[in-house]
Length: 160
Ligand SMILES: NC(=O)c1ccc[n+]([C@@H]2O[C@H](COP(=O)([O-])OP(=O)(O)OC[C@H]3O[C@@H](n4cnc5c(N)ncnc54)[C@H](OP(=O)(O)O)[C@@H]3O)[C@@H](O)[C@H]2O)c1
Image (cartoon, rainbow, N blue to C red; front, top):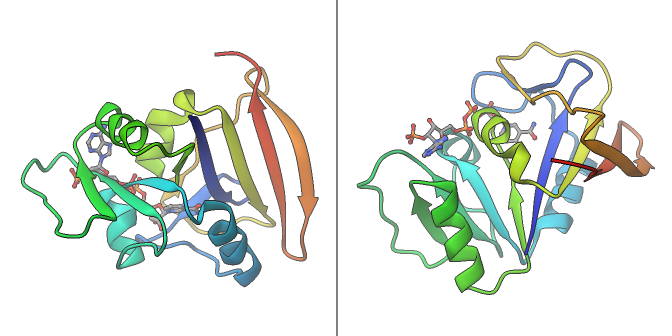
């Protein structure tokens, strides 16, 4: 099973402000949807709250320290650890787990990922949540796709 991080980050690594994303780029939202549809997605509880509902046609796994959270929907699961998320994804035979945010989750689990799919958004924005630095000794950019307002770069891990 592959573990992929997907994120949109600006030139200063900003990813969020006031529990939302500081930009709205339709083509980037479409890219996110197309890439993750049919797969499992893991997110922090704050990101889940900020989305305001489940992402359709994906297994939504929400990481929380609250051990009492439960869901009636088979496509929404709460877990208390990354390993519990992995166990679920493996048991359900998903080939790919996308880690979709936010900052706390990216920072803790970037070292678990095999691949990063990063939308680099031009400019610098006001922000209170940041993506961790992408260490050039660990990550090699293998694909670059230029869009109108952003550039999608795929990075593959070169070492731990
Ligand atoms: N630009 C992008 O690509 C992108 C993508 C996603 C999100 N965002 C933005 O990022 C911001 C949210 O990020 P954030 O860092 O504030 O929060 P977050 O990472 O979305 O969620 C943090 C929460 O996740 C749970 N959690 C984290 N680590 C855990 C662990 N090891 N074990 C169990 N639970 C754990 C905790 O939930 P409990 O408090 O329930 O215990 C914690 O409060 C928002 O502004 C959002 O819009 C941006």
